[in-house]
Length: 551
Image (tube, rainbow, N blue to C red; front, side, top):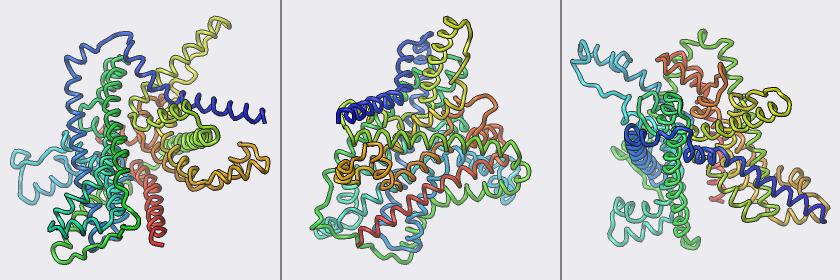
């Protein structure tokens, strides 16, 4: 018995150590920001920092408004209205999830630029000779970046708003109607306030993805704080200044997280009584109203998924012989290897942390695990700086010991290797794996643990024989989601990758930066097709839960 307690205690200490290691990159960024070798903060504050901050704020405001309008309107339509194509749009509105913002930015830039097919067709149709004969808005602006991000990030709001609207009882809306309110007024006075916490969480998730984006803002020359990190670190060669900007970016993240936490607390107030719950009674539409509802739902799917994927498919087919070569196969292999390795490690650590919390929960482990869980909100560029600082310090320490005691140099052991990329992926997406696994583990009744212990099973055997088989679906879901997220991750990969080492994300970014969109189409299409995997899983899980709720 004493030996078992010692093993359990050792497991808890190891779990705390793992959680601390996951937090190290962020802590390293904060440490360097307050003790840089060359303090250029006054120079940044008086020159570029105000512009970075203002642009980031405006981008976040635009994305928040856009995702809210599209997400809430589409969620309301499919939840409360019957119209042509409703059953299709229930899951199709999730499809833009699969398209990274930087991919859609490359596609629409190619379509809408002066030499693109849209403006070429307009000049041919109206016999215009040059750009001076007509006005066409430029997409490579702050507004264009907002639109690109809104088109692929609105599903966050749609998904949570739809769940909130579905869980609302029609009886509350009917009560408002009985008091003389119209359907529109009852939406704004009853349904929307009840769903506001869920909507706020969806917007917060979209904003965190906005802060993480680098490919779109860099391609559109929109100087946000994320782009500023690259400018100061790589352009000015000052990693301390990059860390200082990263800390400012973390303040934006903390503000978003505060909104999310507050919304979750408030959401507990809006649980309807089961005895008074009445399922949603959808209104049948016809005529122009039916067409309007169809248009509201079809537009984001068309712009956010159908058009980009069609263009990519056409470009990929056109350039297949040129694109499908040994270099591309190696790039695909690199992406698969990194993503699969990160997914396996992340899921293993997620199981270990979640199981440690179940076996012997304590405040220190809980606090460390929660802190490590916030890493998903940290932009990839910030994590990349933290990983670089951490690994460089480790490499320098080992090299110094080797020189002192063995009169030899070890060089760089971790920095500039694929290990750094995998570690960054694990740190960034551990929260995704932990959340899915912890949710599955919490559904296993404690009586199963007691039964296994009464049969003499150790915690390790109990995990392997009992818990893992029972939470297999949660583990598979976590692994697939992490795998796809790693395939799409651009900022951290750009900074940490070794020389002459590309993934699909960096491959697409490099070709697009050189205005070679067609040559990047095959890689972009592979990323999008990979991203469809969690979309299909999510749709299946929603359908399954809906069937269970109707039983």
